[in-house]
Image 1 (tube, rainbow, N blue to C red):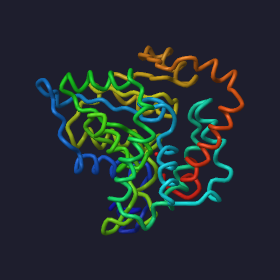
Image 2 (cartoon, one colour):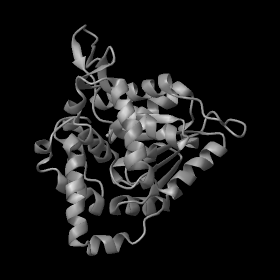
Image 3 (spheres, rainbow, N blue to C red):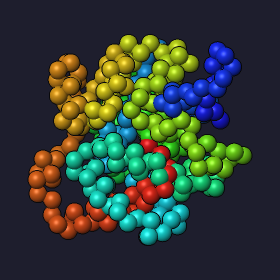
Length: 299
């Protein structure tokens, strides 16, 4: 378990950067819990690929799908949902909003406090089968498989709880995941995080920590994301690629000569003319999903 601070030169305690704590904790978890992938060719140990999850590997936000699964298993009530449905609709139509997703992840953690790690992992298995499997982008998964076939390891990098992120990685045949690490004692969640959610700068710190531990050459590594919030992570590797990019990331990718892949269809039409019934359904479904928003799960 990662502590909140370190001792300074004079022996006084000083707080460490939460992003560094989160990144180091996630990298350590990935190394300790990582599983071997059947490499079909000679391994390439110094190169790897890192994939964001939300709107990159899958359509929509994984945290909301997890929340739906938690709701179905009575981790919280309908009363908890009020006010959160529109945030999932916003995400689906307009892309990632850091403030909204941060609120979701910060509050959802309370829902798993007192529950076991094994319980959340089991929920993650069911949520993948029920709600995530049919939302995987085939094009992005094909890109991930090209790295596996080249002998490179592939990690997901996401603010979703690491136990659930590892389920997604395992089901997709990937190496493992760098996700948000929640503290637990004797296998029971405490309701606190190791640092902060795996978002923004924390992702960059996680890649640095994993690269140091696994002797990766970041100049030979690849990274994929849909969001401008991940520009620091994408800039850290030698082969960045924008997948289904938001406007800011698309512009940045063009300016810097990064690869761009877009697997969405009819996205502009969907933004311009969303049927009322569909929008209402999205809000209702998001309300359930956003419920995990109301307490604290933290991406």
